[in-house]
Length: 392
Image 1 (cartoon, one colour):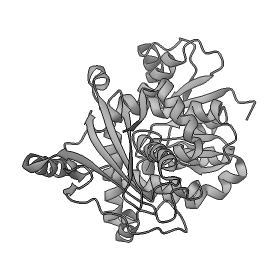
Image 2 (cartoon, rainbow, N blue to C red):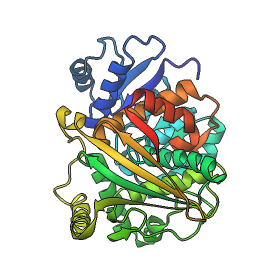
Image 3 (spheres, rainbow, N blue to C red):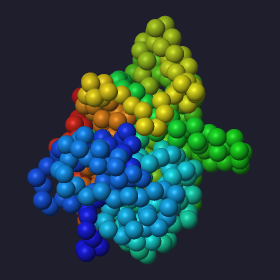
């Protein structure tokens, strides 16, 4: 791929999240002559308008490509080393682009939170990707980078403290300010609609190991109703994104050769507080989760204002528990709203990390953490406003 015209093409640059990715690259890598990138979407006029609106250089290349036109996708892919795609739900708009990247040996990064489609793509294309040289990296945004890397980070500390990784880790959302992305809501709805049409998919959707072909681990906590967490002495509620995050964490363990053990148990919940107020808050979270895929959910292309994005944040706690009850804890925090402000930085830096920091990742289908581990943690801490800290 050394003859490629571009290092990265941002596909979907006229959409809400795609525009944020392009804006981030234009600002963060301004004057970086070593990074050649382009914007792609369905309309030349809209691309030009976005380029001007985000302050990207006037000579930033624009590529017209459409998910419904495989020829245009192949022409786009032929020009680049990697593609960042924000065009979801991916089960509707992602398959042709992914196939084009696999065929051309081009790296692919998305924001996918659709485990059933991801498994279909792994089964269909993994052998071909390994042959062509393509690295396909799913879930490079808030689902599931901070969670996947949070487990990776706390396990490093567990090895230091216990002499071995922990076979039990808890992920807990302590604080989060920001709106659910319209793309996440649409992806969840599309997945639930697909299951409603084909009930044989129910078992797959419920399977924590749907993304670890050929491996089934131990029974996992259901995380489906409010409960008191004895390690925090606080109420917790189901976390909407656990459905994808837990699957990606198990896939990371699988891809890395089970460093967390084959008996690894992991769950995610939202911390809602102590006592009766904490219990009441947990029930409010349950109700809110239902609304997030209802008719009033944000639509793809909609999103928060710049002020809302920049005032957003998240604070995630990871608790690694040794068999004898000893614990180590680590926090992962982000400085923007999770669904847009932080996500657009994370997917951009995933692509840069694979391009610049760690070039010997074998071809195939990856999670960001399994592919890039410590290098990605460093890059996100240096550039994307994330912090990774051990809590004493």
